[in-house]
Amino acid sequence: MSSSAPALPAPARGGRVVLALLLVYVVWGSTYLGIHLALEGGMPPLSVIAGVRFVIAGALLYAVLRWRGVAAPTRRQWPTLAVMGTCLLLLGNGMVVLAERDVSSGMAAVALASVPLWMALFSAFRGERVAGGEWLGIAVGFAGVLWLNAGSSLTATPTGLVLLLVAPLGWAAGSIWSRGRDLPSPLMAAAGQMLCGGVVLVAAGLLRGERFTAPPTLQGLLAVGYLSLFGSIVGFTAYVWLLQNVRPVLASSYAYVNPVIAVALGVWIAHERFSAADLGAMAVILAGVVVITLARRRRA
Image (cartoon, rainbow, N blue to C red; front, side, top):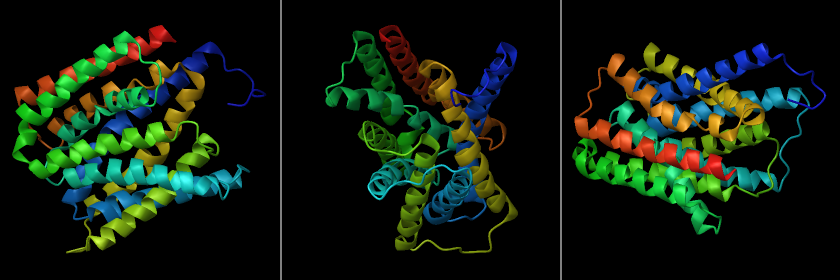
């Protein structure tokens, strides 16, 4: 919100915060199920479910922002957006889509819950100060990651296991690498990343030889539409609004809410099953993320 905009009354602003949090929690938590349904609907993983989704979302967001007068990325900013789009969308989201051919949507969400742990670790490698409480959270969280990769149902799907190790690494590395870079406004940066990352994903899918083996089903088309509109535009816009209007610790709370929602939706709609080891590993990972978040809050 600009500084010239009238301040919202407390109840109205509180209502918008609750709405934005619900959108981020539920919409982002449901994208894992959306990917599962799109795969069931016969949609090619990289080129369509990931690639076309982000090209559509990025193009729509870019067009709206330009129509509203937001400056386009400069020639120096586009390469940075391309690297970020490749790390976050190809290595991050793309590997999740590929993994969900072998693992459940809830399990993919649990593995991605480790992103804040990797981000904290990469921040330490960059020389940023990491408090003792954050190191404790990293240790607890990675104990859960080891449990997930050694004692859960992931061990039965080696390909899915590797892909779900690459995905959080790519997302965290791209996020940390982007700090301090010359970037456009947050929403325009998101549009640019989605456009660049979407093109890279489509190219990667075509190089893999992806194609439709049968006409796409209505379920597949609706799932990709949902991922494009809600997962990529509505959810992200709500998250950016939260970053500008609430404490970062509240905005980042999606990191430990999304996996729970994804698991619940997977059980309810896709009839997925989870072992005690799966749920135990998730609890330990999320405990580590909570410890890191609280430690950062105290330091701030």
